[in-house]
Length: 334
Image (cartoon, rainbow, N blue to C red):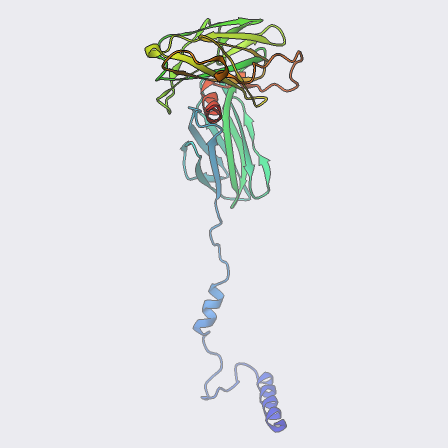
């Protein structure tokens, strides 16, 4: 065994000492031959300008009822897969090819002149917010190769905001009420105003069919208070076919509290506080009014006598944005 090992060592030593150009092969040929196919394949496996991954951006409305969906897309330092994006309810995405280390993406939303953009984006790779709004309707962010970003947006009233308001939404069934009759409103300690950026005083609320739930009617208005609270009184029109109003349940969404607002036969009476959102749901049924104890429930919330420390700020949001907000809560009223 030692003799065999020594022989191998000698052969290896000779091969190392011989110049490569004159080292004989087993067939007596010159050793300077072309590289094998396996060597060529190994060399070609080295990176040589392979394409870099694109950045990906997803854009979604904060609530489904936002009607403004058309975005213009512009990129500096790269290219976008789209020039115009229509944002869908659950979000729409596009990719950005980044030429250098970063690219600047400008997203411009088509908005009416009385509204301005509110938006934010999140960088999933670095787990940080990214980008900034450039009023009134542009959002700008920096992206990198292979980055993943999710943006959500809404709108608010442009210009200075008015006094704090309470927002009141009302649901009714098309099986209980017709569309046309208004619901008169009286406010003690304030006034009722149309919901929106430039709403004026109103004396009644007209409910409209919900575009996504045809069997429901919906309306919304705001209350401007001159004190720490105001009392709202709404009178329902007569229900269809001799039906009677048997329930008017409301939710203080800001404080997550439910209460019964019905004062028979057809009035809804409750207090409101600025910066708070209230959603009410009415029910009627055929026959005479039920006994009082069948309508038992929490009493209307009274004013606490102090201003809330944080105001919800919903008075500046377009009415369509509130529609989905209250629809999501409505099932809890059942």
